[in-house]
Image (tube, rainbow, N blue to C red; front, side, top):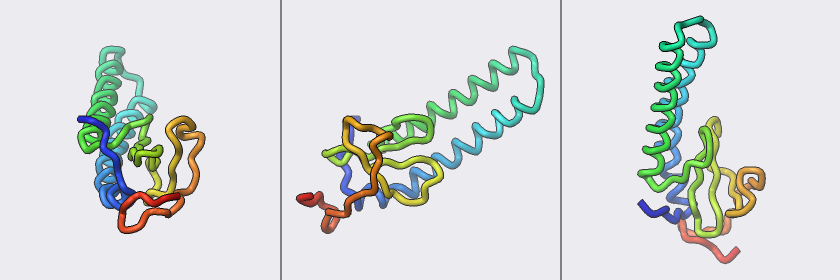
Length: 123
C-alpha cells in the first residue's frame, strides 16, 4: 500500500486504534521478555520465545502499515502529512509532535496547529 498522506484530524482520529494495537503488542511481548529475564530455559525454548517476540513485532508493524501508518522503530509510528510526519511513540496518549522528513525522531517538535477543518494550512 502506498503511504497515505494524513491530515492532523485524520491522524488524531485513528490514533486510539494505533494505541490499542500497540498496547496489545507491548503487553504480549513484555510478558515473554519478563519470563525470559526471570527464568533460565533451555536454549531451544529461549530461541522459540525470542521468535515469538519477533512475530509479535512483525504483526504489530504489519497492522499499522496496512492502515497507512509508517513504523519508524520499536513502538514508534509516524503519519505522513506531506511535509514530514506527525510522530507518536508508545506511552503518549495524544498526537502532539511532528518532524520533517530529514530530521526524524531527534527533530520532534510540538505540532503547529495550522490546519483548518482537517486540511493542511499555509504555515
